[in-house]
Image (cartoon, rainbow, N blue to C red; front, side, top):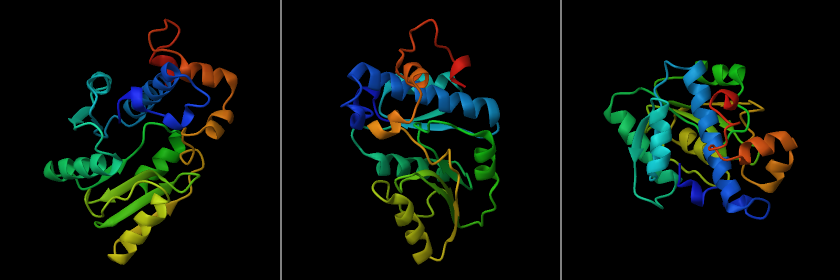
Length: 208
């Protein structure tokens, strides 16, 4: 995850810089709280160049892989894959920290989906990105995050004869990137996401 000061630039026409920073931080808390509560047996790794994000991750007992700034998402994911492979993990789930609603049933379907020793399982975002990607082993494909990445990942896997499974998970497909995404939320939800974590009315409990 990048420095929150640099996050959510596509929301710059509708949110002030401090609001965009709060959105990024609150969504990270929400994601880590969800995983900690419902999937405590899954090891979490947060890749970031930002010490404040690293501190948040460690607060949820997540491991942290610090990287140099401005390396890009594909570099971050590739570094995570190398790290997980080195530690002996058979699979890696790549999950962005900006999914608006993490649905327990959908997420359970995702992590329990059958997969071969060499395979990918993918849930595309509404705009064709890769909102969740399980790679087995972690470095089984070259990552191509960006425009239309879901199809690029599937095509890369198929060309190499790697097993592919694409899941349709409606809520997992919705992330928060654009003003259009934001407009789909209630005023109360927007207020919660844009509120500073220093506010006494906002806590880990009501972010879960």
